[in-house]
Image 1: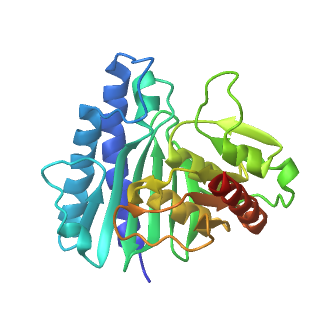
Image 2 (image 1 turned 60 degrees about the vertical axis):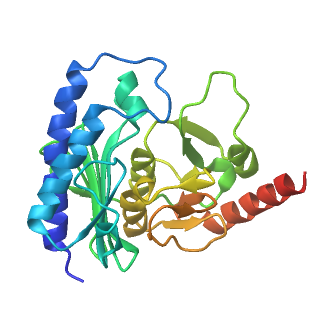
Length: 274
């Protein structure tokens, strides 16, 4: 499958949205207690920039996006080729002005994720991948560098990435179940998945019972093309068919994946028996 045109247009759309988002970010008044579900006018306009660009290049493709803007209809998301968009993933990071947010553009064919772009405007870095061509990252105008997941095979020495927690809070249940060697924190699922793909961490767990396609699609491709694995908690592949009930996402370097799945399944079994 030749996705060179799709990748070029996705990168261009992300760049255009990223420039707008960064300009708005610099003028934005911080909201220190911004909640997880916060959305701003910047999310909506960034999404429109992306949608307009992709619709011009691929008028027959479907669009599935986080914000309920006028240009996105549920009918278009049922096409065989669908763009999956999160204009600002990690809006808390945007609103709190800690720089931890990303522009995520994924692409699916017959409900399978085949292309992903994760742009970090503040870091001026983009990580991207397409099926069969690997995962790459580029900072500023530097040459792109091919990404590779870590070779860590010992969970006790692994690095786990999660969202920020309150100081002094007890470890999250998934962290307690997996028992990694170290935990690092950042907002944005896109950034977390890109960190796994770039080999900066060994695993990421999205433990929400329900998550949306745009929360995972772009980053999913990065991890797999960098040599890692992405599945649901039960080990099944993720099929991108629109918002549905799921039970968590696990992204790893592949070497620790089965061990993580086993520990997560035991943790869920214990919780369900309480």
